[in-house]
Image 1 (cartoon, rainbow, N blue to C red):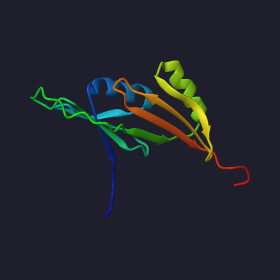
Image 2 (cartoon, helix red, strand yellow):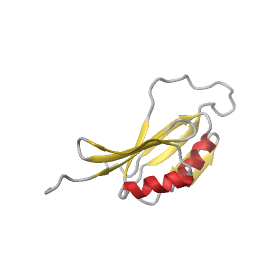
Image 3 (tube, rainbow, N blue to C red):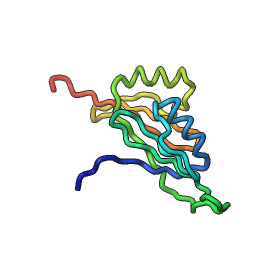
Image 4 (tube, rainbow, N blue to C red):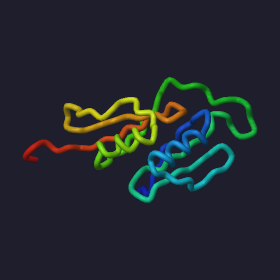
Length: 128
């Protein structure tokens, strides 16, 4: 098998709200918009995001609710600068930067549909 790409598919109530969030705060761009589906991508190594409406095309019936909440995680550099930028832009930061015991800085933000995005930066231990 040769995997040449990847995407996370998220079912949300309002794909347009999540699209604006991912485009304005996280640098994604729209690749395809059709029948309740929006495909977002970046030009770097980020996984593509596919947002689909919780209401199917031509139907008023919602997909069944789920108890599982996905977290989309991106490894970044300069996490503190990203935090300041996101804060200035008014992004909903739900967990400010903090150092985890295993040597990773992390922060979380949440889009208008409740999708949790985690940004992490690995800080190698001193002498490593």
